[in-house]
Image (cartoon, rainbow, N blue to C red):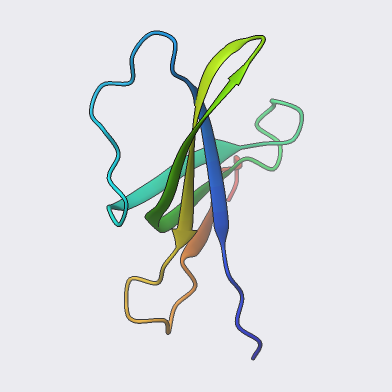
Amino acid sequence: VPARKVIVRVTRSADEGLGDEIELGAEATLVFVSSIGGTDRGRVRVTVGCVVTRVTYESKAGGVKQVVTLTGVSSNGGERDPVTVESLAVGG
């Protein structure tokens, strides 16, 4: 089975303060819900176990953005995919 690397980039506005600093090597769990066209059709919850591998800042016309790069990691030493997808659609 070929190995796959999961990289996630999270971008957020830094203009109003970000609160706590994000440390390299910190473990995190990223969870988001996605669906088709903003409806309940095809709605899923995606969960990714991650480690912070990079934090940068970008200055653009819209303001300053913080970009957090996360690398997916398995919770049991590599035997399990770091990404899980759970159906939230009505009827399963």
